[in-house]
Image (cartoon, helix red, strand yellow):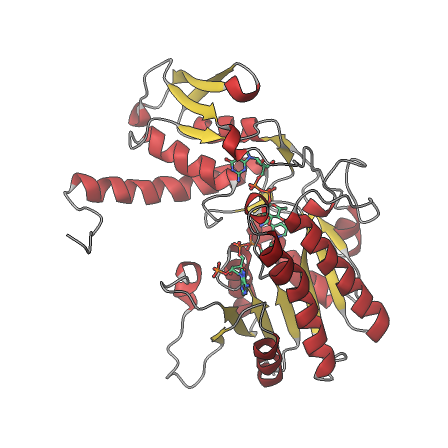
Length: 371
Ligand code: NDP
Ligand code: GDR
């Protein structure tokens, strides 16, 4: 008999990679997706199966983390062996703009899933993975950060996720549920949301190299993150739910890199060496050398400036995780180094931008329905 999984946030970066992973393992995968006025299924379109097919193993349902009755009904219908709760308003800076909604979807949303499982009497059947985050550590208390490092959240997003973390622990202890937190550090990929810093960098670098854009703007270049590849991290989500007993786990590479160095690495992929000059809001990056004739850029050209509008009211300066527990107890090791991740993301974005460039050169324009 195939195992049955429910993934909330199936249309997101991790939802897409996890769906692929579980389908390959022979699972029947149900995904919760929000209704939107345009299709929002780009990342999972290759997995789509027509609802008229008899033997489907990938099934999408409309739903929302703010709608308890919807979640209860779906969990009752699906009777999942495993729930991966990935749905969230996941952008830290945006959470300062929509704090109440973030608390509702990311914090109370997790309670709704846990309580639905309890109300339906599925405590002993359904295992729950909660997408916790290194943002819980916030203001640096200790480096590297492990399962025992105290939390100090620094955004409405992180505070909502802190509620989700503790309600998961509480339901495990109070009702004997198999519910676990994966405290995942930043993980990226070619399908990362376009407004997270890594993807913003690889998209802009590709466009600049192809002559489609002159420069771009970032916020805090000094922030340091422990960046891994989403493919490695979704594998660990599954491993967490296969362990003998429910626990909380830090998933990280154990290495940290400033945003500025990620920019350097992306430009290096297209043979461009950068020089950074100035500090704080006056910092800028210029082309210092350009070795690949495919992407030739004028030496001295300004390609990056700082725009304080991307600064956060409270910042998380330094994240570096200690994945010893996951390494030793579950045998998890990431396969991707940061260099491989940057290569993978640049390959993806160069391909996308080349397509756009080619269409524009060929005379195609974005359709204007109102002309
Ligand atoms: P994404 O932003 O790519 O995906 C988030 C998903 O949640 C999307 O499918 C989105 O739907 C869905 N969603 C948002 N709000 C709701 C709602 N109210 N009801 C139902 N669905 C909703 O995030 P990631 O894939 O990167 O991350 C997955 C999870 O892991 C998130 O909870 C995130 O906070 C957490 N996390 C991520 C890390 C990372 O580095 N990527 C690190 C640590 C934790 P739609 O497509 O319609 O917007
Ligand atoms: P983060 O990721 O906040 O760590 O949350 P993000 O990529 O947004 O920021 C990382 C760091 O880069 C700095 N930064 C910028 N960030 C963005 N988005 N845009 C910019 O222009 C920019 N310039 C500098 C930020 O200040 C920050 O320090 C991600 C999300 O996936 C969360 O859901 C998840 O929980 C955490 O990772 C772990």
